[in-house]
Amino acid sequence: MGFCDDVKAAVERITASDDITIISHIDADGIASEAILSQAIARAEIQHSSVFVRQLEPLTMSQVPDNASLKIFTDLGAGQQNLLEERGFSNEEILIVDHHVSQACNRNYQQVNCLPYGHLKMSAAGISYLIAKAIDPINTDLAKTGIIGNVGDMMARETCGLVGLVRDVIVEDAVRHKNVEVRRRDLNCYGISTRPLYLSLAYNDDPFIKGISNNVEGAKQFLRKIGIKQQTDEGRWLVWEEYSVDDQRTIISALAEQLIANGEPINRLLAETYHFPDEPVRTPLRNAQEYATLLNACGRWGRPQVGGAILRGDRGGSFREAEHMLVNHRAIIRDLLGYIIDSGVTKLEWIQYLHVGAKYPDTIVGIGAGMALSKLDNSKPILIMCTVPEDKNLTKVSMRTTERMVERGVDLQKAIGDASSKFGGVGGGHRIAAGAYIPKSAEQEFVILVNKILGEQFGAKSTNYR
Ligand code: C5P
Image (tube, rainbow, N blue to C red; front, side, top):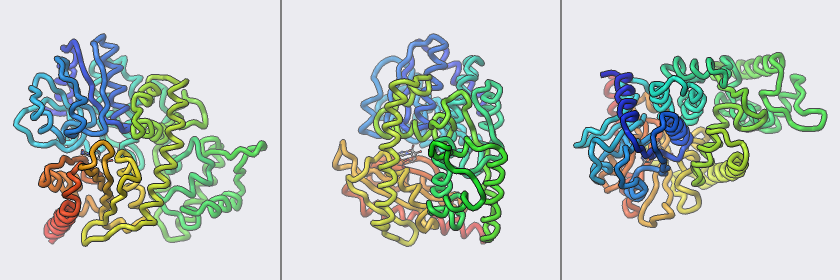
């Protein structure tokens, strides 16, 4: 059996069902996965409903309905199969569509997971799209949503563009459908549709450009010096996508020169980007990265359905609500980032950690941890803890590291999974980003154990190198 056979088996299961419940994750990939599958299922005229959970853990398991429907878990489930088993779900009731590391379990739940087949750069929205397309080729309009989910889950980040099956199948389908435009050698910078260009440049640190990154005035001066008009005649700041191809070329060449002058590599200056010409200009809906942030804002602030409505085309009330959440989301993340940097982290031999208490929602600490890592010593994985408002005895943990550390043998999913299960918690995720819920009473011991496991991982790999 190959990955395509698993997709086919899932399609058979779905089309043979007369009632389906989709249980999905609240992040951009989870929202995109739900939107793809539920639209494909609706078009196949199968009765269905959806539930979003912030994560599958004992507290949220009660949100999974106890009825006769086929339960499809998207962007979660693979790492929490013991919870499904404990709940007494039979094999016939469950289908898992996930890209997280699987947990061994006594039941053999049907799963479509790209990881065991080596498709490491595919998110749950990617798998959902392949299923939707196999249900009916009319669903290729949903390839755009598949791209948003993949980009939202950082599948394009390391490789400066989507790769593998996602690039070859999903991006190509979207281009053929004409609702996505690919720019192969675009500026690798966030905010190309909504941020004044100098801010996009100043907020970007991948690649870090001396005198421009983390330097708002420096970025403005740089553009002035190379003769680039920054405002319209009415005084509105121009965004990257409004510049002509010639201006864009001038800016990219000047940025490359700046990198070279500082002895820095230029390989991360350009990236393949995904644009949506059918969306209104200068909105976050115009490109995959900013669209995904909008969805994340909806999910992390408890309104994933609003993100789902936008993906289905609502440009009225839902879009306005999402824009409000986005403003709030950005402000809190900026604040969290400042808090992490100002408070400082405690360094152990193999990790650095911080407890942010009840100051920030458990749904965003992981995002803050990831952003903080680029401003801290990124050779040590970061671990952030916070309290869970619904249960004062529970602590949420988020960990992040870099691709370089993963290459050196770091596997956060394994570290956090093993350590949390020692204390009766549940954790999972990926090698590079993982999370867990643990008992509050175990915080200190947990941190010490994670540090020890990470030490073993670093050590284990260097032994292999010998
Ligand atoms: O919550 P956070 O953003 O830190 O999650 C990082 C990754 O770990 C996500 O992919 C999430 O789905 C996964 N995770 C998990 N089990 C948990 C918490 C997070 O699989 N209990």
